[in-house]
Amino acid sequence: MLVLTTDTVPGRETVALGLVRGSTVRAKHIGSDIVAGLRNLVGGEIREYASLMAGAREQALDRMIAEAEALGADAVIAVRFETSQIAQAASEILAYGTAVKLK
Image 1 (cartoon, helix red, strand yellow):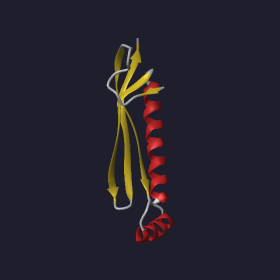
Image 2 (cartoon, rainbow, N blue to C red):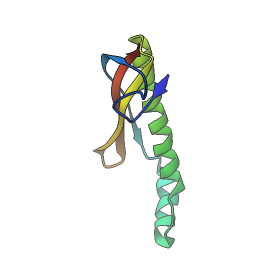
Image 3 (spheres, helix red, strand yellow):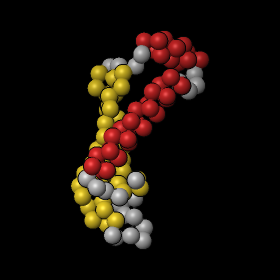
Image 4 (cartoon, helix red, strand yellow):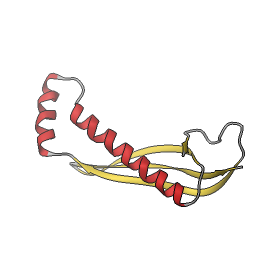
């Protein structure tokens, strides 16, 4: 599956099949919170949260691609990510784009 952030597939005509999206909600783990709190005191990257969000982005992207495949798409264009806080300790990651068939 071709996944692009551009609005077109260079050199190819497309037929839009519709909006596709994938999302996941992830919550912090109390153990990660403790380590992150300690890291916050000394500064630097909080790897526990970075890893959590990277996994969430991959899962959201995989779910978006699965929805596009179910429509028979060859590609997803205009792909974007969005995040929102659901609760104090949980965030949603949303991946969305336009499923297209290549001519």
